[in-house]
Amino acid sequence: MKTVAGKEFRLSVPSGARIALAFSGGRDSVVLFDLLAAAGADFFAVHVEHGIRGENSVKDAEFAERFCRGRGVDVKVYHVDALRIARERGMTVEQAAREARYGVFGKLLADGECDLVALAHHADDQTETVLMRIFRGTGIRGLRGMNERSGRYFRPLLSVPRSEIDAYAAEKGLPYTDDETNSDERYTRNFVRAELKRIKQRFPAVNEAVARLARNAAEADDFMEESAPYPVVSDGEVKVPLSAFGTPALAKKTLARACAALGVEQDVEEKHYAAVLALAHSANGSRTELSHSLTAHIDGGYVVLTRGRERKDEREIPFPRAGTARLMGAVIESVPPGDVVPGGGALYADADKIPDGAVLRKRREGDRITKFGGGTKSFGDFLTDRKVPLRKRDGITVCAAGSEILFAVGVEISDKVRVGADTVNAIKITEDK
Image 1 (cartoon, rainbow, N blue to C red):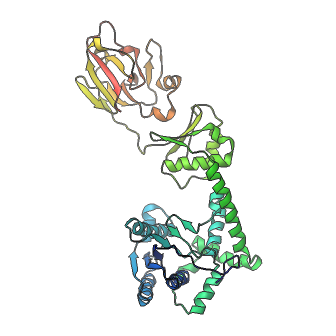
Image 2 (cartoon, rainbow, N blue to C red; image 1 turned 90 degrees about the horizontal axis):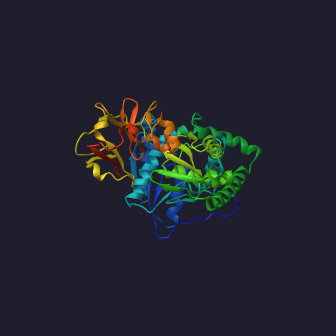
């Protein structure tokens, strides 16, 4: 066989590795099976039956078992329900089948049953992948396509065109199965594959051209990986300095890292990057919403990304009247008036000035506070004056009587409940850290 560059292909097998071969029974995986066997590799086959094609799918699994065992190679067959996964997770059947396969491979790796997983992707698969990503509006990282080695997955045939694989299978007389859904153009990859056949009639070197594009993209992406600053991760938030936004390409790389640090590595699109890049030139306190409950804020010299809670805490807990209580992130304890020593993050209030019916809760729109020293204003404006970041405001625990804030834990005490010379029952309020 020859590669897209016209060189003679030589299979390179990692020394000493136990390999799991992703074996569909189709021509590509059969050829890779034969090459691994000829190279004396230590491998076994893994066949995942997706439950999509009924009896034909089961027959393919039976073929995989016969083929492998007839050649003295162990085979593991797994049955999954890709249709059910697609329904439950709102995916396409293609996406669900892929996720199920990689779930099987991932478990084999995690359980120590293999060191590497071999995949039979070839040069035409690479071309299809890059084209599909272009159609979806990918960035530089997407243009690099698949890698010959991605962690513990490797693709030894990635430089070999489909025509060479077909010729090898014919020359060796290798049996294989044909998945009839491969001709169903309702599936995106099949549609692209069919169109690629027509494109090759006009541009026969398209694989070589896409391979060059992928290499160039990989070089550019690697340069950006090395040059882009890393965000600062702390206490559930990720901070990116505004200085990182001088070069958009590097800023996007840093933002991708920031999103990944918050557990989001997919569905962050060009429009989201554009929104954050625009935000970086906005006033302090500005914010924008991204996907997966991600929010970006301007806080001083940083863009700060956080991932919001699925549900806001709507509880109301009656204000505790005696002893020590730990509630909603606050510690409230009775202290003698003589022990009132302001500072150190503690607030002090006169318990007798807190009316019946007062509750502990999170702040709400419409709340107001009488500032320590006098003057009433909206609690939101008060927090702005105190430079409390937007991202932290919904997490503040307050004691309130209706919409009147009596104290906000870790922030301020209302003038209405301040400790005075006549205070008999004082309380100390601190954050429960």
